[in-house]
Image (cartoon, rainbow, N blue to C red):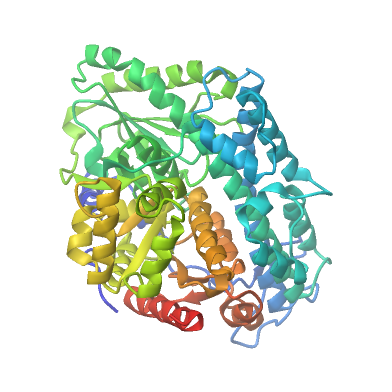
Length: 636
Ligand code: CUV
């Protein structure tokens, strides 16, 4: 196994701030990880059941302890039930995200959300067509209303078409899922159904619980597509742009506002409002005005659409404040460590929560609503300006390793470049390069960062290893953040790391796109919600070839995942037919049935499966092997 250069992170700006945290005597996520060792073996294997208050029960996987819970639930049942529960939470998080966006689109169509507008009318019309809504002779706001209504109806639909499922699954995959009886009919009740099956004394057939998980995953991919596509309508479809990434993006002479979380509804407006308040910051002595930076998937959203610099992904969120230069950490929802409040207390940073159903204990709460978004954003920026007055210059130390990164590779951006090569059939040049072998295959990196893995290490190591072998890499979420911070989203990375075939393709695409050099070998597709951008591209390739996704030399890797959202994203990727690598041992090993289903049997029924491999080089080898198997099946 190859070793990382640092025990905690390979992001050099993070390394510096981990060191400063020690000097400042501020605890970080790595300290808490160390204090937690050894972690509970029952939890790690999925064998702890807390479903009812007769428990907790735990199964002894090795010794002579109990083999069933007090109710008689076996290891297989407990593990499958725990897994399904986690997936329900992950799907719920995506559902609430998409619901929020759809609802705002609706309010906008009713003139109730004055801060928002339709930023991409062409996308709205494209979405409407894919949802089978006629657009002829209709006003744009009427189309928006119908799109929002059809979307919102998907949440609770009990009969009729599941519109977003139809928009994201190709017909062959839909048929396959229908034949297995796992085609979901809506979003909300699939989650409720999943949860109800895990109640004490309910389902005790582990296989049927796993099928419920697969059905839930198919619903999840649909709701994620809704979230992304409606965000594009409201905020614009991303197009390539250059920006910078890592902690060096913070500025000594600016009021720094870090926007963290997931929901673009908030960050878009804060960006707009901050732009109008630059002078106020300068009056306070901040020569460079207000500097907005992103953290986690909010960061990805802003980087994709506006080229806003990305400061950190999940594990380095606390480190933004260790610089001593963050005035406000503004959060919405998901992946916000409760610890940010404690970190902030060592500096002058104001942590501001914004969602009434996502309050952060110890933070200042500014209730953010679409109807009054501008006022809310102004209040937030004012709190940051106030905090600037309290900044202690002696505590400020900002790393200075500015790293360029190119983001903005939406489905539309990629197809626009391909259209320059073949206007009639843009997907053909891509297929030709795959068939000819200049592109051996595609790996989509997604998922989080996790203290069980050296921060960003697996992403950097695996992507370099794959690119060298002419595999095109796509990235979302904290994977995209890691690969931005490490310089893998630059033309230089193509020159430095890509194999000859891939290098030639990226050079031709760079020419077509009009970029200064070749396109980067890692195309940043956005936040973790945006994974369906890649599905759309894969479906285009598959449909052109007349095959399903289980035939394509396309894999997914989440080598540092942790969240329940990432768990279900990995699962839907396998359910739609793709091999999915994970670099962290999932909490299922207490059940041989569940483990075998996820890593083997699933492939026979669905074409996709999980590959668990902790060594990044070995993982890259295995994914390359999967790509080669699939190339052979296709006869290329
Ligand atoms: Ni939604 S889910 S840690 S921020 S990717 Fe990052 Fe991405 Fe995982 Fe969270």
